[in-house]
Length: 109
Image (cartoon, rainbow, N blue to C red; front, top):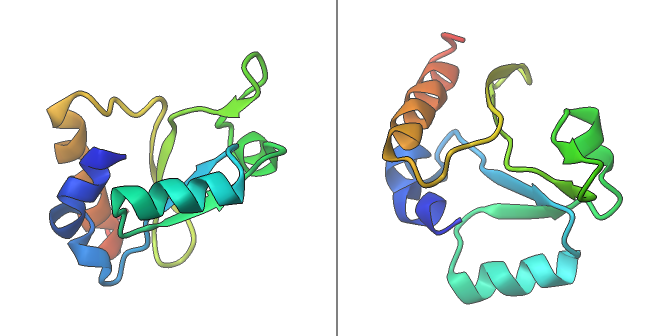
């Protein structure tokens, strides 16, 4: 999550016309505390029962957690890009993500 925070201005245009939402099976309280302590400028949502993760194929039944799947959703609500899993330690993953976000913002899915 630190990489998202550190590259937020560049990849997500500082939140202008883009929403970054991190969904996790962690409790809302734990997520809020973690986000505050780390200074994350984006939103978190708790999915303790894995409902959202299951609906979008991002839930691991074996481990009972939402896995590191990343979706880019365009302004019309369509999923335009998916990385499953997202390779957060690979710098090229952020280049690919920035391009996908740019295409979605421009309506070029």
